[in-house]
Length: 113
Image 1 (cartoon, rainbow, N blue to C red):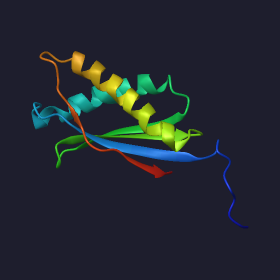
Image 2 (cartoon, rainbow, N blue to C red; image 1 turned 90 degrees about the vertical axis):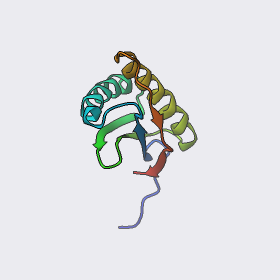
Image 3 (cartoon, rainbow, N blue to C red; image 1 turned 45 degrees about the horizontal axis):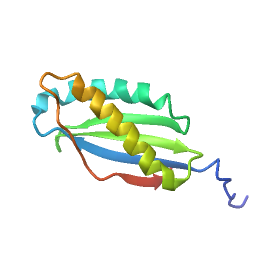
Image 4 (cartoon, rainbow, N blue to C red; image 1 turned 45 degrees about the vertical axis):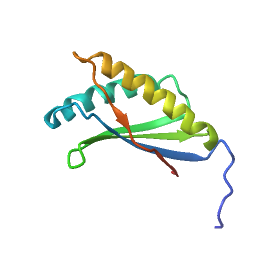
């Protein structure tokens, strides 16, 4: 069987990004990742093109990695959609903290999935 050309609605992409929290004690990364996971789950329900996600602690780097799988969305819209979604999620997680939690989002990588 040969290679099949995918229809634009069949294309899927994965976007991953790392988020650091400079003012957060490293032992609290897991706690923040848990809240971030819940917030991403809630936020992705509003974006039909997001069909999967992950949130993982990278303790060695002191970061939390977030990945989003997009299906049926043109690549040119994925970065903007992901940026808006992650900004909303980070704002929500930051508001849960006393004092507010500052985050730094590293560059994202978009790859065919």
